[in-house]
Length: 383
Length: 134
Ligand code: SF4
Ligand code: SF4
Image (tube, rainbow over all chains, first blue to last red; front, side, top):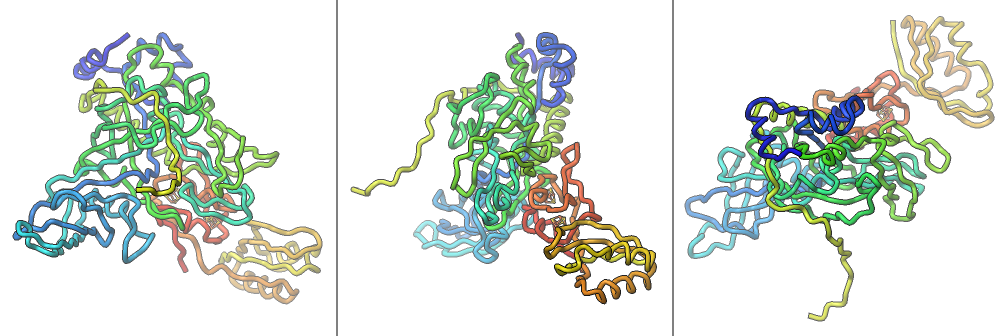
């Protein structure tokens, strides 16, 4: 048993033993769980995948005379301005009014992260205290007051692999799916993935400090559609869609290496977000969870055309091999989430901790272990 | 020396004739098959790379044409801006020829030789870093 305070003391003394969620597997093979838990203090995780539920809050500062912005666009991508006068939120999937699906919120966010100027256009009705009715200028991440990412749902604990039962190619957020089960795509960093290494959220909770987009950020809430009640394997790992987290961090600390806009053909814009979470090895149980490997993590298979319910499940070891067997035939598999980037993130986080630049946090409150995911029912409006 | 990439379109009657060995022995070119979709008694296509002396390559193509096999030269090639690649793998989902694959370190591997210039990967890449070059 180790407390987080004890681990932090070791980090400050430069004595903490930090390994990545891949490296821990070899250590466990060598030494067993007990000895590994004694030896290792922190296991770092990482993921770099398209995360649609992402966006950025900006306070632009006041112009003279001031404006109470009603509609706002950044590089012709609409932002939500139904907040105080010069506060706005730009969502990753919003698309440009001039370029359509090829450019959107994700691209604006990437350009802001890169430190580039972005065109701001806003309109207002004009009030006694905010007389200005329109404004056109450029902003960047340095000349606004606050600019921070707030992503309502990131780092899905697990995600179903995708395929297509129809006779036509379909274009989805799970990539291009070829006809008649012509390919299978999947999106996870598997054994490196944060919430797959802490399946019951024993250490990851509200206030947990994390790697976010190249800087340091925090877990700020349960993510939307957080579904801890998903069926789990014997090792506690959910077998499909499960836990999620909301995260936040200062955009000024982020880098284009870990925040990247994405366009999925005929679907729209999304944003690759790099997240890494350190897991303190507080006991042997925690060590066992972090030693999970791709062959022990399973996921379901979804027909993205919505026509068939598929009973197949695969492990991430099978999916990562490049092909799996489906109804007696070999089907090509392809990832969508970058495992090499996830590995890089876990490595950077490890380095930060080793150098004493990143201390671990005690969660302020746990993520819920019970939560029901509701369906949106279509009901008669009797208001 | 010259290297061209061609798509050959075989009519039904020609499938069983030894066209390849014929051009190879006649003109001393290297005939490298990249992708074949041929079966007995039906039309077929074959994508190949022909390498040899300038004249030999031209003569081979003239010969291929003279025996009634239509060909199309690829004058485009695929350009991938590798420094911007995040190795997500989305492009490998659609590549029919294994020109785009993930290597054992989960990085994208692009084998230009195997590319059929089908252009499917261009729209499958969410970063839009794949294009064609003339
Ligand atoms: S064009 Fe792209 S998808 Fe087509 S064969 Fe070449 S690399 Fe593969
Ligand atoms: S889809 Fe684009 S970014 Fe992703 S691996 Fe292929 S070339 Fe690289």
